Length: 374
Image (cartoon, rainbow, N blue to C red; front, top):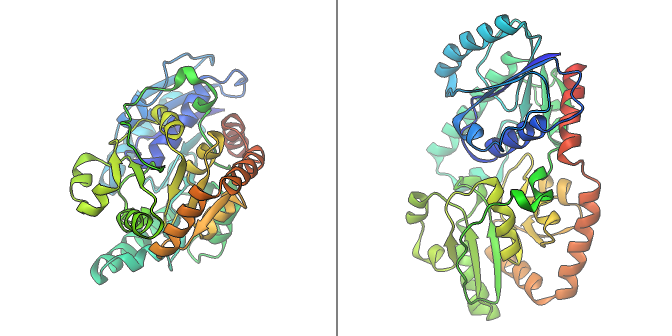
């Protein structure tokens, strides 16, 4: 098989993390005889996240290139077709879409990880004003419309997301396969962990939220939750967050009072953040799959997260769930996690069982290649 892996359209958040993890696994793969030729087109951020290039496969080429949005897709399509023709490629796998690449002359598989497109009743819309809400709905409809024209072959991360796509009138006729997400293979090798400076803070309980400042991450509850924990439960907490510094400066004084911002972090720095904190806190309102869940499980940290279908689908009974729009309920669950050591250990032990039922990153890559081979 001659394959192009397209990650040139990925510039933020979890998409960059997943893309770099998949490509890193491919670069270190030893059983790749079926891959006659692989050309990897990686955005600058994906390229810079790759591990030192040790290539056991005979023919892998990596090119750094970037494109953005529909207009970028037009020019990138010409570049892509030139690569297809030059290397006689038979398949393109775009790690995540939409890609804005239409009518490619070869089979095109696209990864799907945008739950907004198939969740019209998302709770995150309740945080938006009228204009923002309807602009967002239109934007995501156009994304979905684009995706519907780009390919008939979609790879998503959970059976739950596959079922939602089957119920969507624009995507219902697509051929959808599942290759479950997981934690990166770098968690298995401490030599790949990078040091990050984490200040010491005198508190009773510390939590981490490794996330960008998207509205659906629901991070603004942190200030109110910290205040309730202090006034009602007499528990002093700190939340370590990873926001861009300019975004953090726009947060309220109350938010800043209960947080320490580590700034944007590399995937290789995340293990140390888990090591230095007591629990994962993820009040998100919509996800396809969050790698934070299996990462926290692997690092032996309890999970506090939203009582929503995507979280329960991944974490099962291994998390403490709260209503993400009720700061009193959130504070109560954080206090319970802090105060009840036996409950905390019970959740950590259950998480190990859940994690053992998930594929590892090597199995994820093998599943993707199996789907692509057909």
